[in-house]
Length: 103
Image (cartoon, rainbow, N blue to C red; front, top):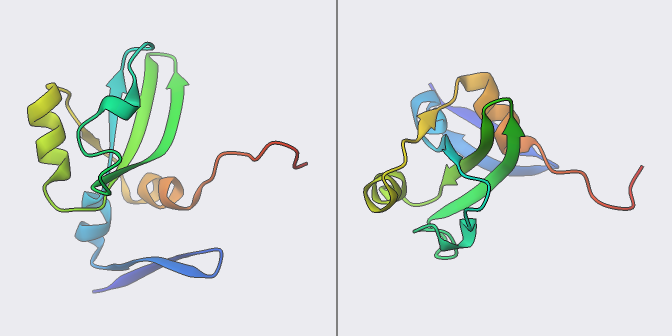
């Protein structure tokens, strides 16, 4: 089975459900961590979908754009990346942070 995800009229994913959920992970980081220094960011291997806080601290949701980027990130930093369920994966892919100046 193949699925597609369209956001604002643009296809952002097409493939199998396992491939879709494999592309998005979350990680917990400290408040002072500079995300720009994470391996893979800025090289078009990873992109940040969401940077937020919950009752246990800071949570960063990432999308893997190049196979192996999550493995490299875990090896280089020692962080543990956690998978999301299908619904949370979809929401992470299509959600956007609110833009300033918009009601």
